[in-house]
Image (cartoon, rainbow, N blue to C red; front, side, top):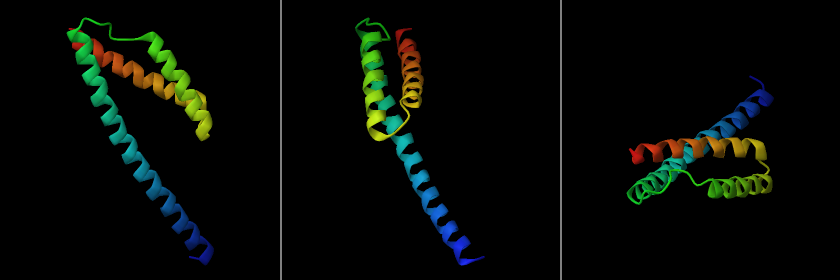
Length: 98
């Protein structure tokens, strides 16, 4: 292995270690987020509130698009990701309704 190849392997390992750490952060962050949305779903069910709030969802999408732009993340990707999460949350809220 040449010095150049060894250096590239070290850099690759550093990037992969960071990716693994960030993946763990994403999973734990999503778990915390879903714990809060589960509590919201239970509260909505208890008070006969609808499982979705389209105006809040639209504000959240707009907010996330701005955050994505500010951070250099593709806003379209961020929006799709948030919409996926919102649909999952609504699905869970509907389960509380029954």
